[in-house]
Length: 468
Ligand SMILES: Cc1cc2nc3c(=O)[nH]c(=O)nc-3n(C[C@H](O)[C@H](O)[C@H](O)COP(=O)(O)OP(=O)(O)OC[C@H]3O[C@@H](n4cnc5c(N)ncnc54)[C@H](O)[C@@H]3O)c2cc1C
Ligand SMILES: NC(=O)c1ccc[n+]([C@@H]2O[C@H](COP(=O)([O-])OP(=O)(O)OC[C@H]3O[C@@H](n4cnc5c(N)ncnc54)[C@H](O)[C@@H]3O)[C@@H](O)[C@H]2O)c1
Image 1: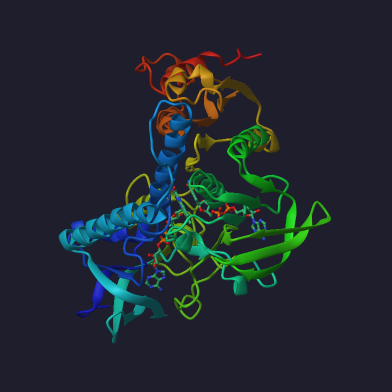
Image 2: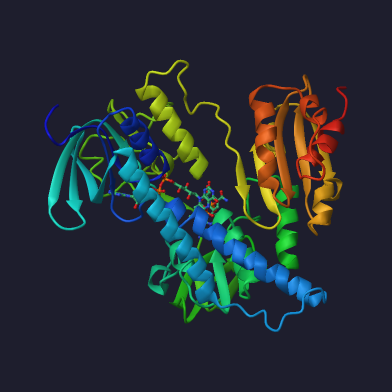
């Protein structure tokens, strides 16, 4: 293929992996283009990770101010919340992030094309330009990086009730009186605490018998107790069959809870029940790209679809839905395109994550449930957060714990979980030990600055039971 509109690499969507692959290849002098129809830089800087953490930070400031006013330490005349200013702080950050992306596009040489991209043939992309008109490009490599969107469960009356998704929630200029959250996963838990702290009554409705069902029971129940302590209400084993009213005015959910009739009325409704991939209206089927049953692009270990040279990355390829995994998807695809040795792949990669509640929930590797399910023998070490002395200075010693799974046969670390202040910051040191196959004594033997949260890792790994 050749011609003016022929590119080395074209990304449909400017999410994490797509934009980095193009920036990276343009830095090697290759001609690349990124097509974006709405959120420059993807969801993370515009409507997901960073804006939500910005609002969570505002909520924490409100919560802590109120706490210290109640203790008499802080003399304040008013601790009411002006949500329009909370939103303004978030909007300013998003605006800066968009400007940062525009600058990178200018300096990297990767072309940014604003419009809706669609495959119309073999490695041929048609763009409905934002400013009108159409362009058709061809590329040696096509990256599908179209992300995902909030799932609206198929419940009678739900769509008509115009529920909020994370996008609209982050744009509210008022604190909801009573926010009902449908789904007790990552989105549900982070927003439940943040909006409770901002002053809303919160009810979390979860279909399973526990929220955060992938976590070990001691982890999810400890976090639920913390949120309950702040006034969040949980309704688990709840099946919603009917919704009436309108979110923003008054909305009622009806169904059953543990088999008995159940109903709840709130002022606002947030759907937080998982994600669906943005794989329709991108010409994938017409271009012969195979999808999975869940409508994600079917990819192999280097994220290549059934069509050589067409890759899918991030949420639309059902990579674990985290921005840092999107970034790793970029490294996987780049490694393949650059014929790197050894080739990077998605096989057996670490998938660390942090839930940004207060305290944070950070995890990497095996949980106890997973180890048991796989029949892997392990030694367990678990310490209360109070053993991490830094937590005492942060007013956070009473809640949470850290635990690690260490192999029963050798001293390698199999998994690590911490529910504690800034717990996410502790992950990389444990990850490094895990990825290098170092024994747990490599952490307990380190000199770690006092008093940091990581210093607690010395205590944790010093307490690993001896091999039996
Ligand atoms: C509320 C919330 C909070 C989150 N917090 C975190 C967090 O703290 N940490 C974390 O790691 N992860 C977090 N996530 C998950 C994370 O945001 C996603 O996993 C990540 O953004 C997915 O990146 P992506 O590149 O796959 O897709 P996106 O970032 O969604 O990028 C896809 C882009 O493609 C564009 N697009 C789609 N179709 C087309 C088309 N046909 N033509 C042109 N453009 C198109 C879209 O507009 C979008 O900009 C959060 C998610 C949510 C919803
Ligand atoms: N801190 C972070 O890294 C972070 C934060 C937010 C989101 N995310 C990512 O975004 C993804 C999506 O988050 P999410 O919370 O939307 O999905 P999720 O899969 O984490 O949780 C969805 C929850 O909703 C429940 N649910 C679904 N339908 C329901 C219904 N009809 N009634 C009651 N409950 C229902 C599910 O059982 C589940 O517990 C996550 O998987 C995560 O990867 C990450």
